[in-house]
Image 1 (cartoon, rainbow, N blue to C red):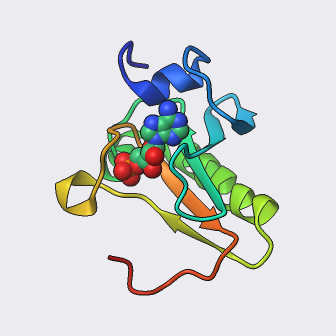
Image 2: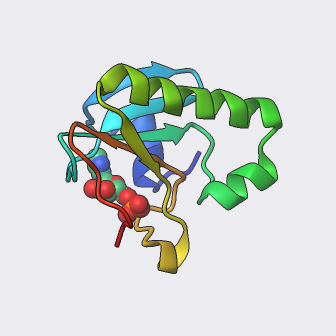
Length: 114
Ligand code: AMP
């Protein structure tokens, strides 16, 4: 965990967030700048900057458990399907450097993304 990372602070409850689900190792909460009627963020407790680092560092069981929470959030919080996005690095458009999956639904998504 990082003292300064905004998502670590949300995980610890130091910054308020609209929580949807919490497990010992992950948190699902609503994005404050939603791009869809349902726009969730799923974060691991582990402070890792991005997906590539997570899969390089974390045990397979932890990665699997996290992915399960992502899919369960999509299924339980949307009805017509959903999209999962994880931005990594400058070209990926990442702005918060604590791994997070965006789970978006509630409208028809366009393809390709910008
Ligand atoms: P990304 O640009 O992929 O790194 O996504 C970061 C996301 O975090 C953006 O969609 C922001 O709207 C969202 N975000 C930033 N700060 C907060 C916060 N305090 N609570 C909820 N969502 C946040």
